[in-house]
Image 1 (cartoon, rainbow, N blue to C red):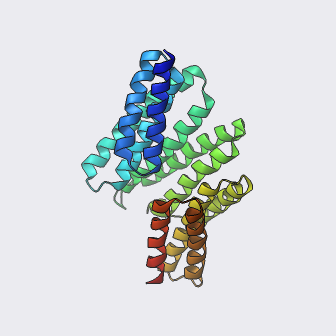
Image 2: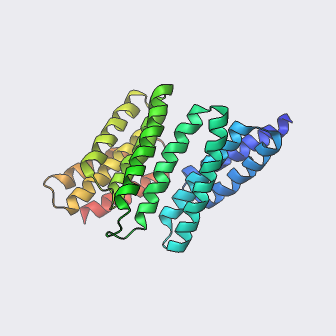
Length: 251
């Protein structure tokens, strides 16, 4: 039995690695294999984690799809998986899992907003759900004293307020990202610090597009700081992403 648990753990870890690499389809395969094994072993808490990870990957895949039908299908599957996760986590009172369930629901509803035309009357309702679900998840993290985890999830929320037209609020996005950056620096989480710098750079790139004075200089500064950290950590793919943004800012 121990061997089976180790195999399930290994599949889950591989899923996390591929998710971090941005390879969501491969990550889904590993999370599914892990979930199947955990179910056979009766490891309900881990089953719930895998359901949530599957949902998260499906949301990320939806973000990169152009086919609206495929996006709808992916988000429907994600919501189904999150429902399964929440049932298990509520029954088992797994608060940390519930925290992630709610922030992932916030991510899911933010992706649904991408599909709506500007005139859609449900935009305000769905935007309110994004805020509500993120807030509930972040409150759980507060109660658990998980400052860094809260900041990491908050950074995803900040990105939603940058990238999704129906939610766009650059001041709010920057406020969240700055708070996250401070926490990552305090806790010496360099990879996350680089992510926060990158997001702040992207926020100022958006402000550059809106002809805000001084925005281009700020964008380059944040992106340069992100690039240096990624290089120091030898995260070449991440560094390349930032280099592309810097090149865009200089055009």
